Length: 630
Image (cartoon, rainbow, N blue to C red; front, side):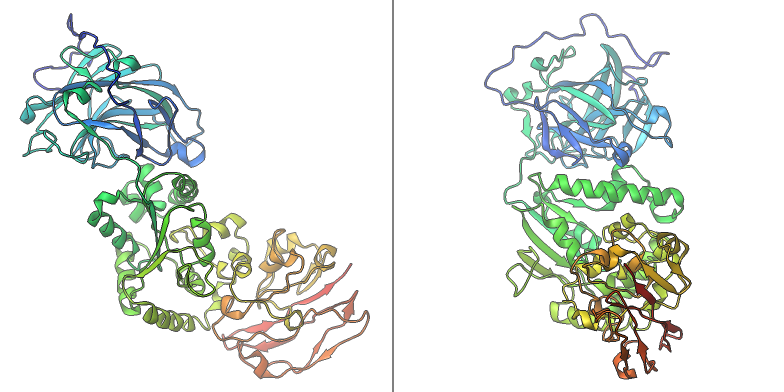
């Protein structure tokens, strides 16, 4: 809001009085270069080679993100100003967003300790935005009128009287008046006399889908307001404080644990206890923060719109991970990270970082309590199918020096239960899944897209619906367990009828009998899985040459189960095969088992015909009838 000393006129602005422009100063060659700080900006913010021009990623979900950056020098006293010119709008497709909300810029000042992505939304930051609002502590008041592409904004701050410090703005040479008076002294924001960057006041820009150019010195084209000096003059005046610089010996911490186990709580506490590290916490919450998704929506809204937001957040996270690996900063990846393959994939770009896994594994009773508390806070539980999937695939991390380790960690820390206890409880919890796996087979699960299967291990399980990707082929291929011999394979399926999408993908599926195209049967080892998904998509494991695996059931079904030992081994052409087996060889499914299994030959591959048996899960399991034809 405007101060009483400089009330706004009816038009919302005041003309600058005669002589308001100050005398131009001669820059000193000895002064360090003042520019935007690549170590004090959001990961999606890009600074150009001149150091003063910048913009953010704006494709797809990034179009909804605000991205901020600060200058590399702040002040702790005096009267200084800087400018920002909005060069152009970036083209975006945002059909669900009003036109006036698609390309925006906010200019202002903030202390170095404040969130770079929240200008004008905290106690220690002040902003003037393109919608014509002045903001502080998240309170937005009408001020100065809107601005956009082609406009130049000057921001001026007066710290000479600390208890009555002021922040003011001008637009295209027009004085807009004092935006706010505040206490910059020890009893207030503690800016004056600041000894480090945390309390100094920095030029700050926050933008969405626009390109900008900062003016931090006369060399940049800045014309200081009367009574104010160019920002870089603070260096020679002794009022400048250098901002954060590149981190030495960069480190990345990867949280590991089931949903609700306490990973985020630990990460936040660790960041507060080690402010000198300036950790950036990476996760879907970071993307939601940049999209300014309010907390109420995150906790109570699980409708279609929130589902879209989560899809965007996951894609944004994946891109930010890529950019983080090229930035000299310290990071914490706050996700479940229970899949070994996902851990390896995410950390692969961070070659020169010190890598630490932090495992949060409370005892089962405490985990249950925390999960319930989290569900109450969020207003919804994580789907049990999703938790079961993660649990079934949960592998505790190892250091890179461990025997047969394929993981890149320099250190693995167990911050609750230690490894031995965590391994014991994890084994017991996996045992407890026995008898529940068949609940995940459904047509909904079979229809899930390949992208959903890939994204599941990066999400925080906000999605609704049925989950069966514990048995997805990606997980099976990446299992550390070796495949059995080809002769021990057996084609089988669940008792559920094939889904509509499955029938569409395979014209030769007739009821419970399948005839597979030639590409499945020539020079490839064929694997069948416990549902139709195994042959439902064009990129699945069954088509991969020389892959013989139907992997150990610990990675597919219940812990300790044993698969029927019959298979798709090659036999002499035309030779029928009669096999017998007893219930003991199907113990994972519970007996009784059929006493015979007829597998006639077709072009060297046996056809498997239906034999049903009662299962311990309360249903009837049937083997897949199929013929391999040329």
